[in-house]
Length: 229
Ligand SMILES: NC(=O)c1ccc[n+]([C@@H]2O[C@H](COP(=O)([O-])OP(=O)(O)OC[C@H]3O[C@@H](n4cnc5c(N)ncnc54)[C@H](OP(=O)(O)O)[C@@H]3O)[C@@H](O)[C@H]2O)c1
Image (cartoon, rainbow, N blue to C red):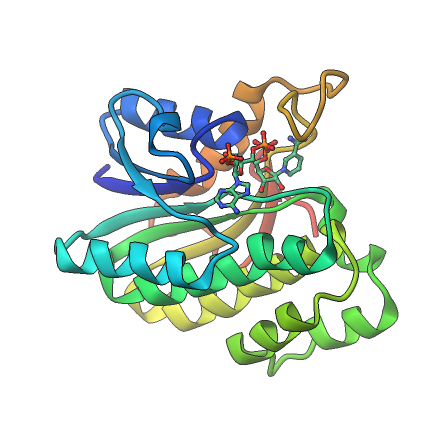
């Protein structure tokens, strides 16, 4: 336990993750667009994940306060809208935020990229599969891909999965575990009322990645603790 930053903590899965971490004794920083939307007993940290300057400002504030992060949950995302915006929120934002926060991570910190089963690599276009499966894939390549914004939500989550793999490799020497984790189809504003899983079930899947023991996996894609892609 320690300090965790959870983006998209205003509602849905992110809010439940933040609330559970508070109950478990964590100090929680809620990355939210509207500070009034942060869950109780968390510290609101205003950030718009679609806005490069806002993401940089959040990282700078945390640095100025000498924050040390034991967990980062990149949860904020959108499902629909223009591809440009989907990639900004779902891919570029998490990439820029995670990269800017690297100096603040505690040894053995946990990073969770909240992904979706729709990000399965096999479901993506041949050209995207080729780019994302390149063993030499770098953060610069992913940044370039995010600027191109090919395709929509599923493709953005496939890129997020690849991003988890790249950060995981870079952060292995520091004992930091980075995984992409799907909450499953859950009843939130995004998932809708017909989804089979509760918000609590979705959040539990994500929290598994925060609670991993030091010998836990890194660089993988999981749902309910099982590898999915
Ligand atoms: N629900 C599902 O069935 C399902 C399935 C698979 C994966 N997921 C993934 O699970 C995660 C959480 O989804 P959810 O179902 O909880 O979605 P949700 O209910 O729609 O909540 C989305 C969250 O993201 C935040 N957000 C959106 N755009 C933002 C921006 N530009 N800057 C900062 N925050 C922003 C929202 O904040 P505001 O309140 O300010 O809009 C909100 O807190 C997402 O990564 C999603 O892709 C969900």
